[in-house]
Image 1 (cartoon, rainbow, N blue to C red):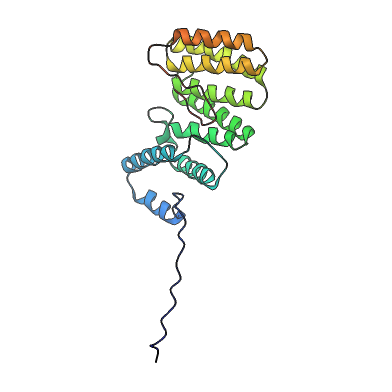
Image 2: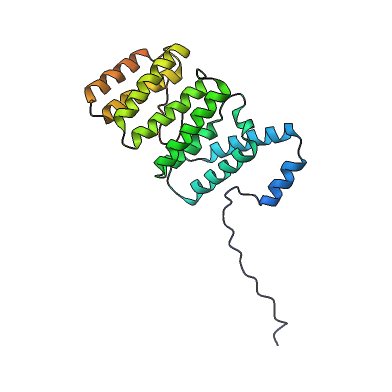
Amino acid sequence: MSGPAQPSRKRSRRRPSDGSVHALVQRATRERSPFVLVAAAASAAADALVQCWPDIQLETQLSQALRANAAALRHYADDQLWQPGPHMLLFRMGGSQGSAGFVAAAIAHFQQLADEARNRLGADNPGTLAARRGLAFWRGKAGDASGAATEFEVLLADCLVALGPDHLETLGTRSNLAWVWGQAGDPARAVAAFETLLARLPTGARPRPFGDTGHRP
């Protein structure tokens, strides 16, 4: 005779976490935490999001979740993301939008970022110049290679005055300018610009042109 029926055990299928936390938990944590802890938590969260962001960006649930979490963090702790300068997360957000095909949104993001950086840090700050570089890059990606080249030329002149010829932001701008000259149909000028860049590179230096991932040097 068989024993009593056992309750069925359904195997739960757990989905991988996207890093989201219930809104009520987030609010209770923010309201009960002193400012110094909020600042530290915001910095740690921003660092973690950047570490999670893949270099090769596709429009997936992960990239959508990362952008949503980054937007929430910026909403609640924007000031902390500007100490002492703009956090890399701010650049990753715009780069992710552009890589996902939302180029107009990426342009708007970097326009706002450049304006805010200028107001917070001044026109000659490397963070402000990097935000302007992101803006010019995505305008080039949108098809306005000629307009982007003009922006990069002005930006390079500003970088030379503010940072000098050997700063990585200056060298990265030179790289982007060479790229956009090629996009504008002037390959000879692009090659000459890349040769000039290589001649100026200090030993071991590897400037990163502003690319789809939102990296900056």
